[in-house]
Image 1: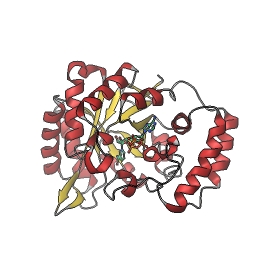
Image 2: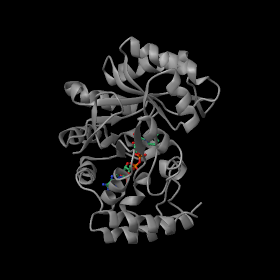
Image 3: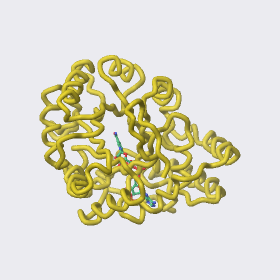
Image 4: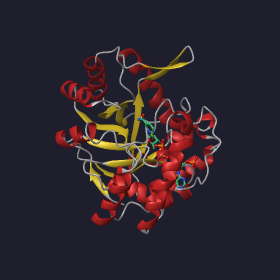
Length: 312
Ligand SMILES: NC(=O)c1ccc[n+]([C@@H]2O[C@H](COP(=O)([O-])OP(=O)(O)OC[C@H]3O[C@@H](n4cnc5c(N)ncnc54)[C@H](OP(=O)(O)O)[C@@H]3O)[C@@H](O)[C@H]2O)c1
């Protein structure tokens, strides 16, 4: 496993982070039994992954509870990254980064995670109704109380990252980044690189499609993450991804590893958050961690990606 510095924290984190949105189960990611999730976490730790990313919103607490159950005997071996600021109101998801809601959320997260501190506490999505300075002041207070070690943000645009960093010490940004979604390249990724803020790339397999496991469009429920969040699973976009995968198959590595390694090779990336449903997927994905695509291979991939640019 390769380890990289997380900003100025003094922590070295694994280049792969275990993503646990899939532990939500149910309508969002399908059936995933608790025992299987726990084994997945053990496999990740055994293979050198030292960061686990979760959120209260993943399965409305289910993911955090599973992480808490699994890591309790080996708490110090991993950094727990969780989040705040999403809630349901009248059946809709709303962002809420008010100090009051953050206080409520962190108390619940600590209980579910069976710990008295969170290593990386991240604002899940920006909240346009709460000044970011108010949010950051609250997070800095939690940090001073020892409940939070480091503060991170997620899905923030460059200007908001700058604003947040002026109000508190922000050590990381979490954003979507994969061969199929490169929107951060000209903005947030550059800002993080320049300011020495860690960059945690989520959705590196675009929900699994980049593993090449689908040869025809899957039949997904509307509530499935691949329907509402990663929108490459139907129609023309699906065909274009299959064309890309044909090119990626010539790289001499399994497709999942090519997709992960490509993100790893991009400047400024600190860790790649990959969702794993079972220990086998962990094992398969960790195979992407200890080598690099050659400059020639990266060039070929860039050319293939350029032809995808009009995919919208
Ligand atoms: N901050 C945010 O707003 C945000 C948003 C999204 C995600 N995240 C974080 O980032 C993490 C990663 O993103 P993600 O889980 O959404 O997407 P992802 O990592 O691109 O895809 C994960 C899915 O791909 C499939 N998969 C993984 N490895 C595989 C393998 N070796 N072979 C075949 N299939 C494989 C699994 O689903 P199947 O088994 O069902 O195919 C798995 O759940 C999340 O878990 C979460 O922690 C954060």
